[in-house]
Image 1 (cartoon, rainbow, N blue to C red):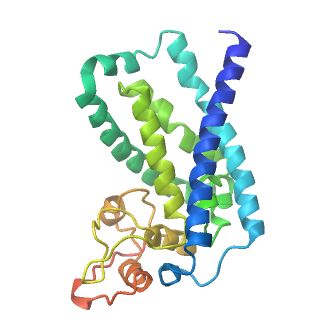
Image 2: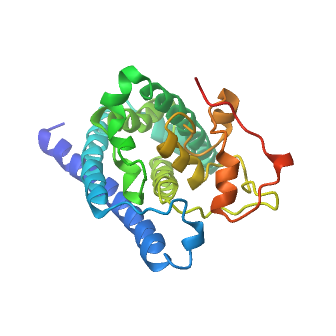
Image 3: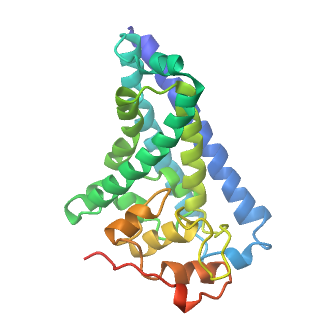
Length: 267
């Protein structure tokens, strides 16, 4: 495979990742922070709004992350063109049922991968090198989604190549997975709680993370490591003890004390 082919593939990767990021980050920002800012004022989690300088820094850092993702993506490109990545063709032969199953499995696996790598880079010995950039956005915005240090971008970018090597998966499934992750990522950093609340003040579909769940991670850092689901935090005792109360406040609901279940803050 010649250098030109790799260069063209890299540019294609950049174009695809950049388009996804810009479209969804800008769409969430424009919809929630501009068009619906007044109607949704009661759903804003924090009174303060990040300054334009923060948004610009986040966007610039995200461009670097996208370049890293695109470079790591060349691994699967090289393997497939060398005949060493049979998974996509195997997955096609296994049919539509397997395709949809791999999408669900990929989301579940990514959530587990994210939780454990996320906890790892919160280790004080790794935090400054791998994760400090992301937490400089103490009050996040939709543009925070890909605002990573180089090491964290590499860790996040490795998931798809590793998955494709291990699990037979069609390429269109990867595309849908990537759309899912950027939608959840930008909404999770949006600063507005859009999730519906139950009568007792707790989130409907409580196994899913909400914007409040991740916003607490940015404000407190020692809890709420999950990406899509809350079960790892609950199983490992790393869910913020004030999560339900904060969610109820963000949705203007009264939290019934008999239904409050708090988790121990990690040591």
